[in-house]
Length: 263
Image (cartoon, rainbow, N blue to C red):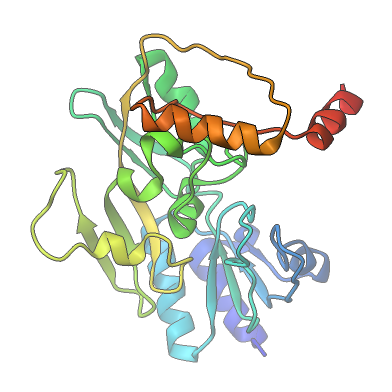
């Protein structure tokens, strides 16, 4: 049970408007895209690495669990506060700090929405390949926590392929830089340890991501098959001759009917 004195300490760190503890707010952050629901005790919205570090130090001192959270769109239960405690919500750390097309890098905060980054890159002729279905709302910090992919991962790969470096805050509040601008920085590859760890090991507060030029042209094709088996064989045949499409999507008869009813 978190004491009111500790909540007051949190308000001194991030400001009163950035701490929620009313029941209606706790319920809103008690679930993600999975069926499970567990109630947090307080929601905290940090604005900077320094604030994240201060919150983590205070929580570590009091032995209070902390769960980092982006948009809560994950399907793994990664943002469910199974032991109560603090939800550390990153939506207010949402700045694109740098776009460096010459070196194919962008530096962002974890609360940047995936699609917002895509929209910022598009006029420059670049894009960030990981494209989860939730990209209109999911955050880049959450994408890293889940090692998210999407339709484009067939050709381009998932999130882990595009994370060059991270600034992270450990459970003790210590701030650590991992990786960097280079493709293959010296030392142990701690990026591989943290990407996909769902915030269990550390919370990312700054991300250095690899971006690539947009294709010169794209073409969308529709093929109709008499059976799912035939469509699956077509996918195997396409790839076996060395053609790797940007994306492949399969819709069966039921899904087509659902889409037609919604139009």
